Length: 500
Image 1 (tube, rainbow, N blue to C red):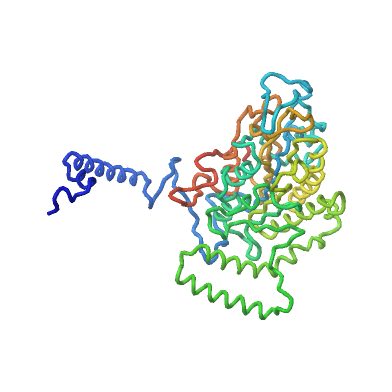
Image 2: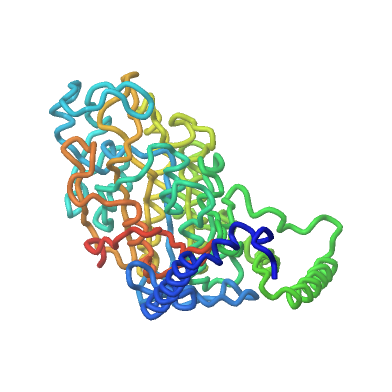
């Protein structure tokens, strides 16, 4: 038997009667707690969230990750179009009419902060464009967006949105992934992870980037995060088709097929040895999809085949080159949705380094010119896209989301020509399948400065979009690093007042 001097200090504590009884009692208590939690559904095999609901992880065949899957409940929406305007569109100059801005124009009433995101504040400024009642509902919309204004009877506006940040990269992340940090799955990845796709020869999730390039947060806006790689967005636009689909010169169709067959055999043998390798399964699925896309994409990208009336409606033949290219992107979005692509995310704005209203909606100076420039690009093609979807009956099963990462202040910056970031109130709208028509939910205060009636978080916005797609945001989850992760984290409530 070892003498006491050969026993470690930790071992001596175990041999001490008092510590032995304390450790034993604590261990037995822990076992009892584990048993109680398991009975309530909190075991690893049958986890239950704090909401009292058990998570739902879709059953996915790694060999066919895009196979269509049933949602949690039946809804009319089968596809979703997200129109994202990076840079922060000014709600007080577009959709959120505030008569007090005219009343207090040029003044600085009490409660206005001395400093905001980019420095000292100036005075209250009336809208740079006149507002007029639109549609049968009489919704007040500014002359900046007359085409979208003409469609207000189909929209459900949310005027009381708030966000957690006033910085663009984090704001884009938060809107698109539910987190300000990078590395989390985008909304489109969550939807395709849950529902797969009804389209076998095109990606389940397509991100149509602005003609000027990627938005501030880049691929994180349509990335898969920790979800399997198969669910990341495929990015291309009307000007830049998917890369590496065209067969190299001097490489025959038979050579191409022989290479694909060999690759499939090699990957298949490797997958037999490592059946849980999700990355390899995703690569195999992407190769197979690429083969299908070689046949389907050239036809899909041929925007010139659209009738002249459609070209004129979207504006592919008028305005600046940027407007014409964005119009082509809008036609491409409609064609993708027609083919059954599950999620299409259409970007209007770019630039990972800023741009101050030139490459996106971030108008810190000369807002009258820079917002007008962005609206000239966005308004006609976007209005035509929504009108076209409606005319073709596609809004019956397509959800439309128009959004931006936050709003802008009702007062000017110190430079007297621009509006600073406003995370405390901004406007987005929904339309299409499952959405009430011609309504407004929530209100900002008399200046459009802060959400005042039914303040609404991005978590609520995303929860509502998932609900409209037939998904319970409290149950759609993915087990990652010991946590049941979800798009809305541990927050969010469905905005029932906007549901049809």
